[in-house]
Every structure is written in C-alpha cells, then in structure tokens.
Image 1 (tube, helix red, strand yellow):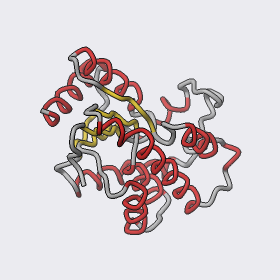
Image 2: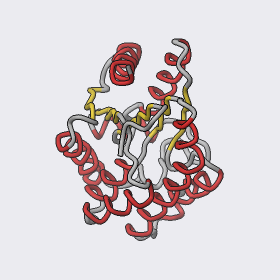
Image 3: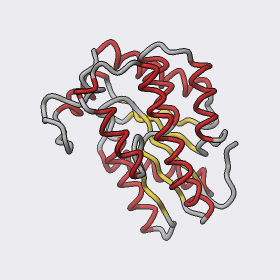
Image 4: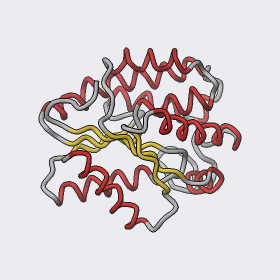
Length: 217
C-alpha cells in the first residue's frame, strides 16, 4: 500500500558510490528551504536498534555471515525503522527521505546473493506491513567507479581504502546488484525513477528536487 495519508515517502537507492547519501541530504535541505517538513533517515539504521544491526552488517569481521541471516537482519532493522520512525513521521504529514529501504534487499540479497526474490518480497511485506515508498529514485554509476568512490570515502568505524563488508565483495557481485536495480526499475516503472548520477552534483540535485516535487504535488 503506497500513497500513505498525510505524508510522502521517497527512497534513494543505488549501487555503492552512487552518491545517495549526499543527494538525500541535499534534497532534505532544498525541501526544507521550500517550507516542506522533512525527515531524513537511512537503512540499515535509523533507530538505536537499527544502528546496532548496521554496525554488525557492515563490519568486515562479520564476513562469515550467512546470506539468509544477512537478509533477516536487514528486515529486522527495516521493521523497527518503519514502526518507530517512518510511519509516525508520515502520519504527521512529513516528507520522509530514506537513504535505502526495502529495494536494497532485493538488489543485494536477491540479485547479488542469489536468494529467492519471491521469498524476499514476502518477508519484506511482512516487515513493512505491506507499505511501499511513493517514489524510489535509483542513482546509477558505473560499478567500478562507484566502488572506487565508496572505498575511498571516509566512514565512521571503517578504514579508508579498505571498505566495509559489503564494499569488499567482488566486482561481479556489485555488477549483479546494479543489474538488479535496473530490473526492479523496469518491473515497476510507476514507482521507480532511474537516474544517471554521473553528472555535476548541483544538476543532479535539481533533477531530484523536481522529481520529488512533481510527484508529491
């Protein structure tokens, strides 16, 4: 069920190094400047519980994590995130911008890891009570370039130049993820917008603002 009463739910997705976080934050600022009440959040994380799960999931020390367990941890973080943060904000009429949401699991654990997509969709629906974003923007960059950016971007708790647990996956894995995002967008064109993110940062922000304001009304 999308189009939740009172608020507008937009998610930003994409492979590693696509600039999602930067653009989500810039989008937040631009909407606030326009007088639109906004909540920025992220996955995995967004809550105290979710942040603990995020630390576990991205820690290179968790390299032996089973793919099924990995997905269920993301789903657990998602369920708490929705209940504690996203739904209350939407109920208050806010525009919620989430840096990743349910589609990341389909791209990474489904297309990337090869887990059954139907099963993942079913568990996602259980975790989210069937709620889906009103708009999902996928930022696309060439996989090798995106990985280079991601690994060399300083992040709390991770060594620059090494990358977190997901960034350390093979190039082939990350290519499957990128191809998965394209497949998701092709399968649900009314919700998804696939955007070329290899562009000047300001130009890209302008496009995202126009997309959100056009859909939000």
